[in-house]
Each structure stands twice: as structure tokens, then as C-alpha cells.
Length: 447
Image: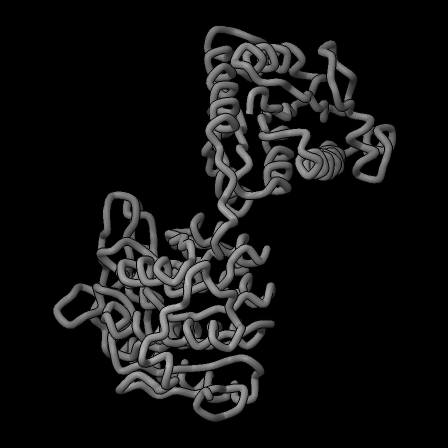
């Protein structure tokens, strides 16, 4: 890429000087600029490539109608819709390679919609007076967003403002030049997990799947990682998923800020992506380690992972609710789904002698989940296996790979680019010793 094109977005009616400076800096770094005006009040004195009139038209309205709405919130939402649709079209046509947006609260609000309209991996930089603010809900932040604080930039140019704008321009141009589109030569398998100190199955699964000809991406389930995973799963970007860390779902139901949103464990099912699922780390609810333990978790065992994040065990009533939600969400899947239940534990800190060991809670969860899955009999494509092991045991990986290999042989998963490894377990289709296997769509062991 010799001359990447950056889509620069801002309100020319209030920030013409700042947009002109940003364009100058981007061009000085060897990139081209396509400047979009999303202002409403006037045209501004900077020349633009996409006028505010065109943005309003893209939203199915007129600039005059937007101005006549009499409400700044409604007006900017209309402009945000037009800007997002325009940006998506420009990217699909190959006319832009990255996004650079400038704003206060209004411009930032709009920029989030535009960023969300562009695919994961397209560089997105927002220079904002409210960067990293508590005003910003996590669900508005695209997983690959870059933010730069626009210090001293509310009204007019100054040395502090220029410094921030120059950094934003450099971030956008550098990201576009350095960006590498995701590979498409091998089918991609998505795995969810936490760090190896808590969940470590990916250590075995990643090389095993790569040997089968797949590329493997492991997502860190601490909120933003789960959002990226769900977005890609819903878009059908995976050949299959091994969704073995559902702590974000437990966090969501436990009212934790460490959530991936209300759609966790639904994306793969909606796109009919084959999914092998396990309830890794669902016994914990996360909270910021720099804040007091939430009242809802008072008296529960706590593990402080670092100065950012800590976890507390959830009480049996919440664990039963989590089990019911897992079963309900898998029951909505449009494609193959298999739930693996490791009955001896779901993360490293729940083992005997560890800080979160809670056999009563584990039993409450396991019993409720088995009851719910038994009630799901007849659900097409849904399987259930209760495993007499811990999720970090090597045998858990073997059980997961057995299901995966069987699905490949049955044509449910796209084969990798090398011959699939036919393990003895996959060849004879037998259950792993010590596990109970149910094909819930037929009420029998899988053929």
C-alpha cells in the first residue's frame, strides 16, 4: 500500500481549523484523506469531500429536516446513521483503508457508530475529549478501537491540541500502513479462555488443531475479548468454535462490569457455526480489584488476580441461574452444538486447597445444568456430555477433539488444509472412559 486513504470525520461547522490541521498531518505522513463533514449548523470554512448534505441523504433524510428536528441528540443520531452507512459503503468499494474521527461528546458518540460499521481489523482512531471516560459504555467500543485524548482542544488550536491531533494522525496512518488483513488460506477456529494460570486447555488444543490444518485464535474473556469473539462468530468467520470460558456470561448475570454484553453465547448459534461449549470459570464473578467487594458478593471467597481484576465465587442460586441460561442459549443454536460438563471443576482455583474451592456451588451448578440439558431432549443438533474430570485435565482436551474430529468426518466442520488426524477415539466413535454421552436431538449416544 503506497497511498492509503484515511476517512477523516468531524463537524466542520465547529472544528474546521482542527480538521484542516489533521488533514495536513495525515498528508505529511504520506496518506490521502477523504474528509466527511457531519456538522449540522453550517458548512464550515474547510473544504470537504463528503458534505453534511450527502451524509443526511445517506440516512434517508435531508439536512434541512435534521436541522428542523430541534433536538441536537436526534439530529446527531441521524447524521451518525448516514456517516456509518457511507463509511461501510466506501470500505466495501475499497476507497478507504482506515478511520480517523475527531470530537467532543457529540463527535465521539457519532464516531462509535461509524467504527462499529467497519469490519474488525480496519484501523479506527478516535481523537476525543472524553477518551477512556466512564461516560462511555463498553458495548459502544469496538474491540480494535484506538483512542487518543484530545487535551486542551475544546475550542481552537494551541500547542497542546496540535500535539494530540498529530498523535491521532500518526496513529491512523501508522495503523493503516502496518495493518495485515486476516488470513483466509486456512479455516479459523475460535477458542475462548482466560490466562494459563486459570484455564490452560488451549496449550494442548492450539497445536492439535494446527496439526489438523486449522488456524487458531484464542480470545481473552475479560469483556472486550468476548465482544470480539461474539462479533466474529455472529458474522460466520469461524469454521468452528471451542467456547470453553463462559465467565463473561456469569459476569453479565451477576451484574459485573466485566461483561461481553447480553449476546454472549449466542453469536455462533445464530450463524449456525459448529460450537463445542464448556462452562469454564462460570463459578466466578469478576469485579475491579481497586474497588471494594460488591455487596452482592460480600462474604464469598475472593481471589485477587492482580491490581486490575479480582474474582469472587457466586452463591448456589446464581450458579443455577447461570446453568439455566447456558442451556437456554444453546437450545437456540441453528447449527451443531455440544456441551461438555467437567464435573470435577471448571477452573484452576476451584480445586481442593485452592482459594475458590466450593464443592457445594459446583454441585448446584452441575446438577442444574444436567437437569436442563435432559429437558432439552429432541433439540436438533444439540449434544451433551458429562465428563468425570476437571476442565484443566488433558482428558478434557481429548474429549473436545473427539467431538471435533467426528464433526469433521460427518461434514459438519470444514476440513483443514492437511489430512485430519484420525485418532483411535475418533475412529471408533466411542465415549471417553468415565463420561456420560447424550445426543439430545435423538436421545441416544452419537453414531
